[in-house]
Image (tube, rainbow, N blue to C red; front, top):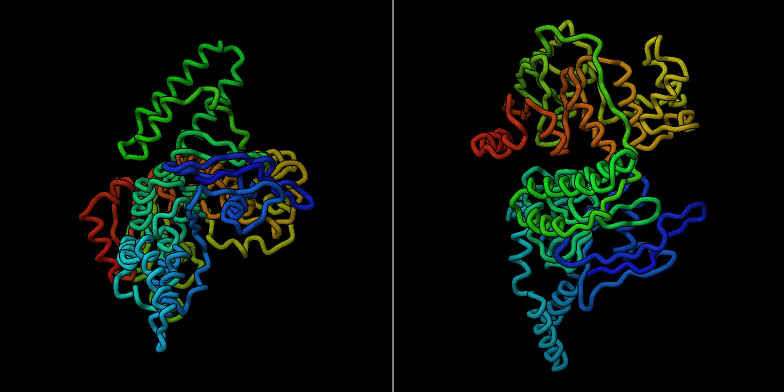
Amino acid sequence: MLTVSDVSLRFSDRKLFDDVNIKFTAGNTYGLIGANGAGKSTFLKILAGDIEPTTGHISLGPDERLSVLRQNHFDYEDERVIDVVIMGNDQLYSIMKEKDAIYMKEDFSDEDGVRAAELEGEFAELGGWEAESEASQLLQNLNISEDLHYQNMSELTNGEKVKVLLAKALFGKPDVLLLDEPTNGLDIQSINWLEDFLIDFENTVIVVSHDRHFLNKVCTHMADLDFGKIKIFVGNYDFWKQSSELAARLQADRNAKAEEKIKELQEFVARFSANASKSKQATSRKKMLDKIELEEIIPSSRKYPFINFKSEREIGNDLLTVENLKVVIDGETILDNINFILRPGDKTALIGQNDIQTTALIRALMGDIEYEGTVKWGVTTSQSYLPKDNTRDFDTNKSILDWLRQFASKEEDDNTFLRGFLGRMLFSGEEVNKSVNVLSGGEKVRVMLSKLMLLKSNVLVLDDPTNHLDLESISSLNEGLTNYKGSLLFASHDHEFIQTIANHIIVISKNGVIDRIGETYDEFLENDEVQAKVKALWAD
């Protein structure tokens, strides 16, 4: 159990948290949510002891151990992979090192013998004899093959290092586990394994993530950070979002009687509970939802941008044909033998081994990099593009208002319209006069999405559009693209995004493609035959 008592954090110009009092208890997984800039990662750092709060204190239960996922990929270059994982338990690792140092002594004294015996006892008590096999199993579960376990970290790729640090955090069954964006840089298989691991994990987990599918799968509670306070809610992200939206609607309905509102809330909880999956985590949540007090369901103050894409004209018979496409960057073949046809109405998710592949393909399709082969867009198509790297787009000191004006039609380029439009994208008042080159990552993406809405193209090409966005903006974008009547081609790591939007999945590689039409993302992942083909395609 982790207890937060009277914690506040103040800077000279603002207060980030104030009088936070929470108990995080064993057997529960808490999703820490809040708008961008609310201080989620900062709060995790306070819990981890990396930042000292202005007031209050954090306390663990007696003899409990806290473990933190850190993104310090290059701190262990000269250490063996297996040793880095075992370092997850500081006490065990230091005993191992001291024990080994004593046994290495040439002049082994009686005192050394006594100390060695003490250490052996402590080592056994902490599960030291099973440590290597446990560490090895964690690594294998994350697709780090055994031949790498005794290599130095410097020999691993960045993606492999990410997995080793995750294994380090999970090692030794910590009493409290703090995870900041644990799915970043993980492949689908590793994410699925981590979800199952956390569902079965019996201690306390606190996680920050922008992956709604992950939060829905693993969380028993949401910890909402809003206006400097943190409030705990029972249920996963979808329950928190839908229940708070329902509460807001009922609060606004002045004509409805109190008993009608109570009945609607009760029916919502019963419906949500009945739809829960049969996983252990869902069962645990259902028991809690059955006991929920309706007063606990309150409207959220969170604001959602209004994202609604329209197209000025329909696409004719042809959307996109790609033949024998090859991309070579700095002498290395990134993609080869890429052939596929997209038809009007397709909402296509691109799945690659890595972001380099998906970005290279999207840039080739948009004429942004050189390639071999044929890319043929239909004559009635008009494409709008959201690149992963928008540096070029914002290399100017124009205000948001003036920057956006260049993409507006004559009927929509006046200040009144644009201010109202930007207001719905959460740029209020004088914020519209901010220079675009000083905006945060999330603000830049919201401005780019505003541009795409104004252009009214019938094809959207999006490279990792949820990157930098908060959960509210991701939800709104998800809904906007689901309702979009045009065609869509996108790359994303967001499971929920792909599952709810895509009706066409294309797996790309150096060796060709796997083309799946009329299949959801979950069906694609659960199809063993297809997944075997994907594995073979990516074998090189």
